[in-house]
Length: 121
Image 1 (cartoon, rainbow, N blue to C red):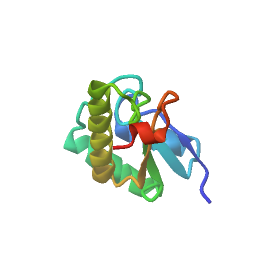
Image 2 (image 1 turned 90 degrees about the horizontal axis):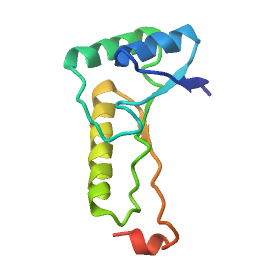
Image 3 (image 1 turned 45 degrees about the horizontal axis):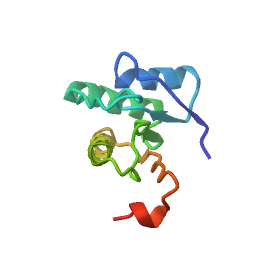
């Protein structure tokens, strides 16, 4: 078992690795974009490369996870927000692939009492 932490990416993805090393984390979870909004700004290839190199050097390359934005609700009836949620998760899955993350953590959302059957396609 590895012990880790959610670390900030402020200043660039690679800064998260530096913060993890500073607290002796063996695993990390990060946001790939601001968690309270829908903004999906792509990360420059050189930033992704720096992140991967630093994660490898720190021994974290097998223990990196992304956490999706808080707004995702795949059980919503609001079609615009559903599309935004799917786009956000697609962005996160692509970023996870690029940085070699092991997974993306996200919360499905709330059906607001309508039941799962009402919101499943």
